[in-house]
Image 1 (cartoon, rainbow, N blue to C red):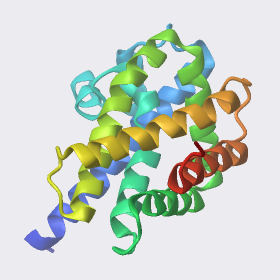
Image 2 (tube, rainbow, N blue to C red):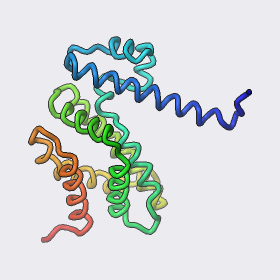
Image 3 (cartoon, rainbow, N blue to C red):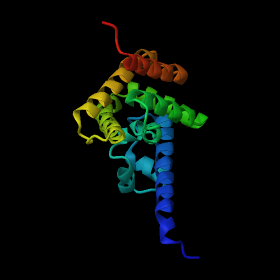
Image 4 (cartoon, one colour):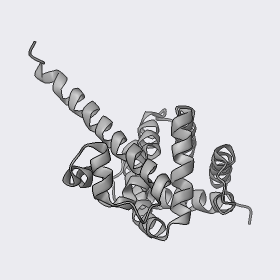
Length: 202
């Protein structure tokens, strides 16, 4: 039976998501088994049964396998879905809570592993700065859309920068303990955002 053209984009997206997940799964397994530095992109591609060129289509660098997780996508989707009457900070808090609630145990464990690896591996930690900037850009675009502003509007960018600055400052003490407790991590995120929303005392 011929697949209707209208069904094809959905099928393509599902196949892409499956390939992306497979690459990440095999990469993280190899990192655990033989260490991050000792694992080559070619080995990851072979394990995932894709070509190195396909690997780079999904992940521009080896570090991105660790840094580009599903939480960013889930949170941005949840942010767009928040009720329009919410303030930007209330919407972000709601989006983080919604994304976290949708995590499976497997996803929670993967997030814990990749977070610990980001702190432990210098190459990943350095690359994280680029990812941080990209996430601020993406968040600013969604905040701007929600408020009818341009994506490069200074208010939207300042809000996105403040949000992620607070998240980083709130969670660093948790991250630096070594063993990542996700409940404590997300509680710290929400507490920091709640304080930003309430304002700071003089």
